[in-house]
Image 1 (tube, rainbow, N blue to C red):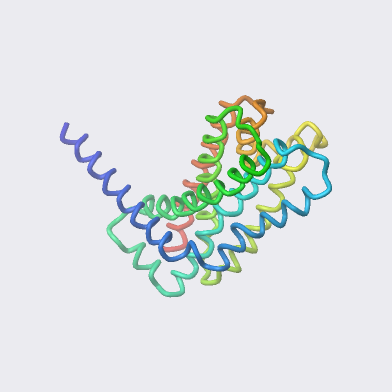
Image 2 (spheres, rainbow, N blue to C red):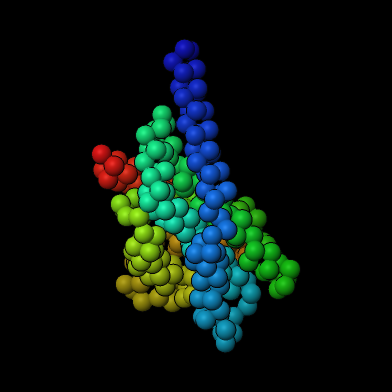
Length: 253
């Protein structure tokens, strides 16, 4: 019983530390111009470049816009905040604080998750208000938005482990991954319409499963089983979290 109480107390302390880190990022970085551009404007312009001129109903276009917005917004906070804090040496003080590395990684990921979830409400509201796009499966939509946001927030934290003081260095590497993900995830081209090699590649993209769940919220159908979508995103989250913890420990020994 004593061990259980100690474990619960330790868990509460770690979660409080993670939340304190997330609040710090919310207060300092959410309104920085480079985050607004990379997290909001860039995905919007990219989506418009592909959507304009296409004869597609809103139920096909709106889920894609939400998925792209989540991808870029969720993974834009940490690649900016962590290099800046390395430059000012505040990240070193954070790592030396009496909290575990797991709390640091979780807290940084939470800031991207909350930012992305809030930003995702913009295209979601636009789809409902401006295009009268119906929501057929609310649970699939909510689950898709939340899980995908946390997944890519963790991916952003993972890339930010690279020991540099320049956000541009991390953003360059990150875009080498984010941009291909868009084209092999069924966002613009349905999975069934992709060539065989593309249909194999989609299995290794977390955006595939997030987009599938979000699209189910509007269309009511999924390419994969919804439980498979949820399980796959959770596996990616676990892999990103474990890899991030390993890299932060390696680069800061």
